[in-house]
Image (tube, rainbow, N blue to C red; front, side, top):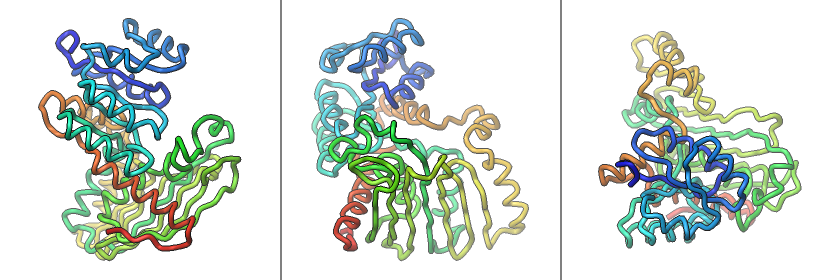
Length: 347
């Protein structure tokens, strides 16, 4: 604790900068420290948030008794190792996506959570996009009828410069367009559509000099009987859309990331009026929704706030390790199917 608030720290100042900003903005915590191997990145944080302690050594940072929560924002294959070290040092952890690049590594976080009694949450902030709440409610309530089909397509772009570091490597990134960019949408797919039965996939390298793929295409079958197509790419110049489309016997819902595009329910008293109302609320994405509802929090800030609430109230965070592992299992099944040409079945 620091100044009567939860003490917060962040290791890794790539995507970790979003965690830093969220912690600094929160009324529930105090940004205590940041850790990175590059001094210039540390200096920039101090310029923005004077008084923040900086560390080049992670273990030294963990010795600080004022730190209660550490955000783990390192290259994906380092998540489990550093999360476990933090929990064993008595810190709660919030881990960036993906939880790690293999199920076995990710399970070490769950085992450490149980062993130490510390809180471990995982970042999948797209579940908190404003439009996701009504979509999830429509599915769970049966308003969309029996779910038949989902189409998911992450059509993004990354130039070659993006891949000059650890991105696009199997040992540190665990994959390319699917594991890094599209894993958020894989999480949404399984959260919305349910348990996966099988995947059959193809992948390739089309526009980058990298080890991993920059495009995948999959047919995903669910235990409910529904089917989905899933596409990921970082070749779609200049970055097109994130399609999330759901079709049931009772209607259709379509979105582009956080922006609602279609909302047609068969049993609505006035389908056109209802769609117009939903598009007015959610057609402008998160920013418009936040303007209409000052209490709404989206993005990384929503996950940091949820983590802080879990620590304060001694409750589980929104996404526990076992939940986050589901998307990693699906991603690795896609890669296995693409490599072997076989359909991969889930237990």
